[in-house]
Length: 446
Image 1 (cartoon, rainbow, N blue to C red):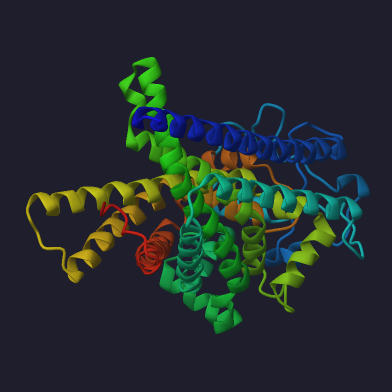
Image 2 (image 1 turned 60 degrees about the horizontal axis):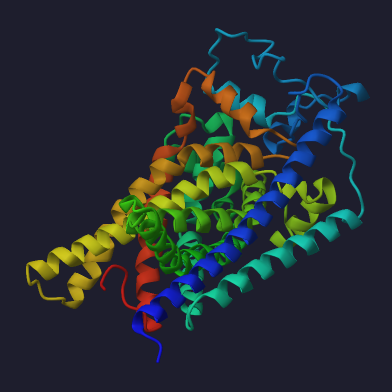
């Protein structure tokens, strides 16, 4: 008869093999994503024919009236930075206002070299099929490694993310427009809302609702599902590593939670990136997709190819990874700590306490996750606001050279704090409730 120790060792070896397979999948996905990003960057530099840091100039609906009526074909792109990374117009010591930085990033300096096509290219169709196949294969591999009933985590995550992001859509619209419209930079939330409604009507506040709901339905399922499935696997691997190396640091639940959060945030970024690009484009130009967000996605693919939906992947990762790690890990830790304190004090687990504990933990998690993900959110809004290609590193440098400095990354922060506060609080409460409906214990209660 197999001893209990042999069974534990066999289980640990199984978890190690599962983690190894998952690591291979994540690495493969990373390599493919990186190769696509490198190819886009290399092609852009070749098409410019000037300085290697020259970039394709985006288009933005706010400045249609300011566009030049004509320009030489050779000026289809413009070098926004000289070879040393400084602005040729401003120099090293200049600190232009943040409004000018936003305007230069989203306003076209020259006519675009991109011609409209009548249909999506064969190359983009193949890339879409390959990307979708890899995503499905990775998800199925992960589910096969998990225990029976793990689908409940994916279900609860998808429901809570879709509902919590759809409800505060008007706040998100105002926040995004404050980040990409120079006329609204520095304007308070109420005044920005008043101007938008007066100019474009109440409907503008619900721009991008479709891609928001469906995008976060997929993103939430992947983010919460991957996080919950990976936690026991990573913890088992780290525990075995700690025993092998005699390093107690590896035997840490916090470290296991953080590694799981990074993996789930990265996976969710890949899933959400196309829908977020479409959402921001629809918010920037309410007339972009009058026939629905699916037609809007086809329009981006037709004009810009798959790169138009994936160009914000780097800032998306910069935003989603710290956001996911901070939100999920802090919620886990705070709920576990509060429930432990209540048990130590012999506090009765009433229905009110079961609601209060996740509520307090969710509020704290919302504040922390908003702060850590704000810089990535700012860059993501600017890079997806218009057509064309804009490098995240160039946007970072331009914002840092503005009169705001690091504060330039926190444009729209107050609006986003309200938005993220509502989202995360609702999301984690709904997630906890749906989990209990599916027969899973509340977070931190076991």
